[in-house]
Image 1 (cartoon, one colour):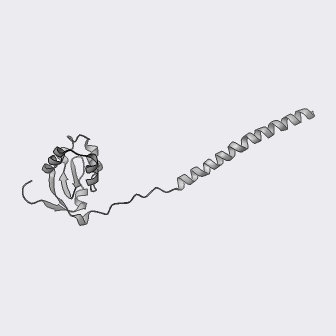
Image 2 (tube, rainbow, N blue to C red):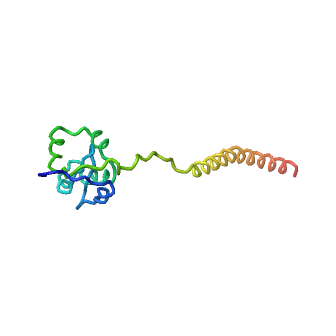
Image 3 (cartoon, one colour):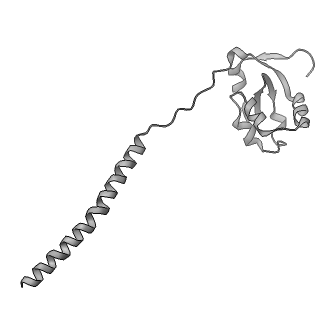
Length: 134
């Protein structure tokens, strides 16, 4: 792209998150990868999965070749305004209520595994005692 590169806000870049209009943020640069969607070796799903966030770590984790990094330049459309990138979200584990219920069910199963054989044994002795007394 000739001339000066445009500076984009993160909100604007995040709107481009579909197969026919896909932009990515990698190393502070904005790339319009729409024409590359069908050619990407990992498929378009891989690219769509990293829209709406800073995809730098995802890109680097894959270990792209130098030729792939050079190819990116033709899709470079501008820079990202770093002040608009949201802080990284920390992982929040789901509520533990379901696990507590599972523990309650486990306790009930253990109690029943202990009591049912004892009740059967008691019933057997009761029937035997009743049969002998007749």
